[in-house]
Length: 192
Image 1 (cartoon, rainbow, N blue to C red):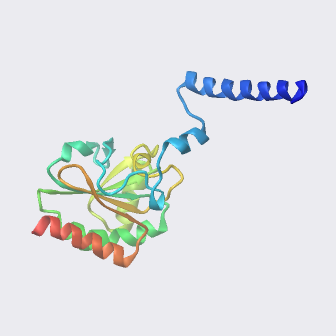
Image 2: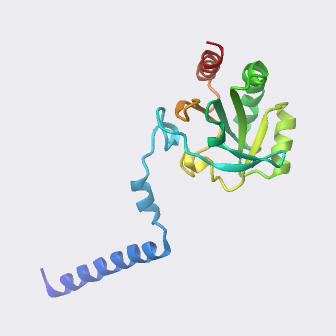
Image 3: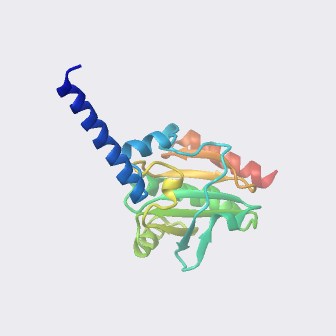
């Protein structure tokens, strides 16, 4: 190897190391590093059935705080949604009618819409326009969402969490067969 190419190689290695060192000092990883560290599953989920559901704490549409781990001992359905999502608007009335209205009085069941990148006003307008009466939780910075799916992933998606805090079902988009399975799974958990 010529002296020129050897010096070029050393310079490239030094530049690469400096970039990694800078990211380490700043406490952040480069996008390429983040991609290799984070396992991505089907439908851009970063969690899978059987995993413990990542905890989060956000403000609800009534001003109270919602913390997932506070609901251990209950079946919890997280409906990741957004005011700007057309498919969410399609799915939400079905969730209201076939899940929420059927189980809303069951003290062992919690259902919240987790509004991604929405303000309080947008979340309330979404609930009103779709006719849903279950609570909305505000996730304006996608803080909760990115614990479950990649930042580039879309909504609508549902995560069903067991009373022990484990994920028992994940859905994506509004597919009738998958939705029917979600309804059946919730009924089985709450009615058996």
